[in-house]
Length: 272
Image 1 (cartoon, rainbow, N blue to C red):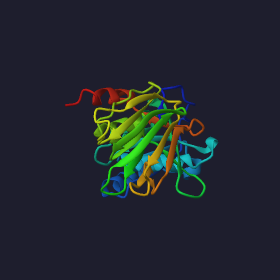
Image 2: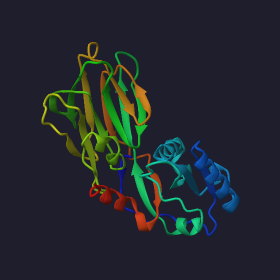
Image 3: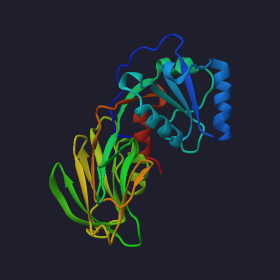
Image 4: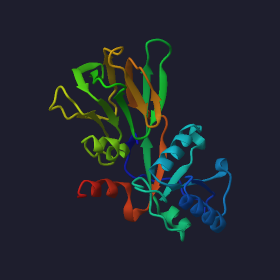
């Protein structure tokens, strides 16, 4: 996820908000969507006040990416209920009292990352990431990367399997598995984390201000090809990658007050 800000005052919902349900293809998610449509009704997506997502974290990310393609005034608030496996980004699934839960939910603003990629030739390719942007080696040979932040070279050469830039929402996903830090909501930070660093072996990454502009230059790209991935969009054989927060594309997530996203991030840091 991009930067997440602390809960803010959202526009009030109508007494009977229009709901549109988006379900993963699993049997559990489809059955939940069918039952909820019967209980609460459904309006067309472009007439909805809230998009209700049923599935796991992947289903929620797909729904958020669809929301990013809408014009600013047409983006809907998103409320997820877990009918998948981990479901870290979603609320618990309870079919009853859904409208009451929506009215009492806390809103969190999410800002994605913009990835711009240059290959050997052609115009730069752009993609948005809600969790993270990753650079990954394409062959058996380690990647060699040069890292600059705000146009200042910070690491002349990183030999590694890759590196990633994570938002607070994504900090508990791939970033955490790569031993990166968990970022609390409202911290205004991004995580820059190496993946299996070989040299410098002890470099564990950096915490950067959310406004930082990060640049990766791929060294020896023909011998050591690298791909760049923004969530689920991959670009191969990249030469240069630039990453920054995209403040013009805000998204709004809704969370139950008894288990806010802030609480989930805090609890994850004390999990065994």
